Image 1 (cartoon, helix red, strand yellow):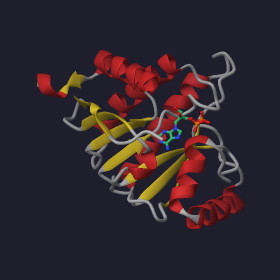
Image 2 (tube, rainbow, N blue to C red):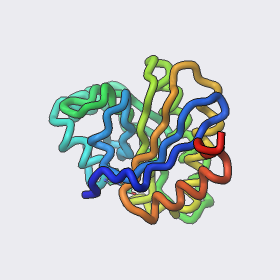
Image 3 (cartoon, rainbow, N blue to C red):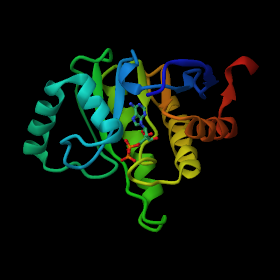
Image 4 (cartoon, rainbow, N blue to C red):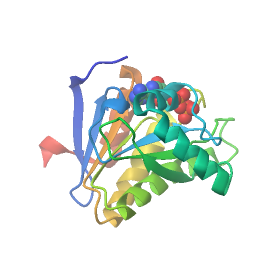
Length: 196
Ligand code: ADP
């Protein structure tokens, strides 16, 4: 599990002056208002970041997830729901389901962008100021990281300026290679903080 690593901290500025931070770390240890879970439709937990969030947050999160699925059924890809964060430092967990990569012809890109846009809108509607994302779909769901990073950073840079409360968006990435792709993507669409 990566330790907090400030040498990989990269900061960019979004269109409305909000901050975009790219970090390497464990998202379950982030202290920000919301962290995002790359869940699966059952919301019953699993491996990867989903398992880590349920392990760190404790059983209260799963109880809430079960109640949600009981009410609305499985969560479709691209959609979001919110629960408490149990024993983690953040206030809320926003659960979303990324697309499984089948080669790009099944609207994977649009669905992935919806994950980010819908999570940002939900956080903003809950009057949250900061949110941390993992790299949705690039683990077990096999989305190519270069493409996923471009979609993720573009969705954030387009959506955040439309919102009122969110002032900071973090990507908390688990490995150097993934981080590198997100940094490249951010250089293409955002202003680097120390250049402003
Ligand atoms: P998906 O099923 O959406 O592909 P995964 O959890 O399999 O989701 O992987 C998504 C990304 O999250 C991968 O880059 C994986 O390395 C990363 N990841 C796994 N655990 C954590 C964690 N604790 N914090 C941040 N990122 C994580």
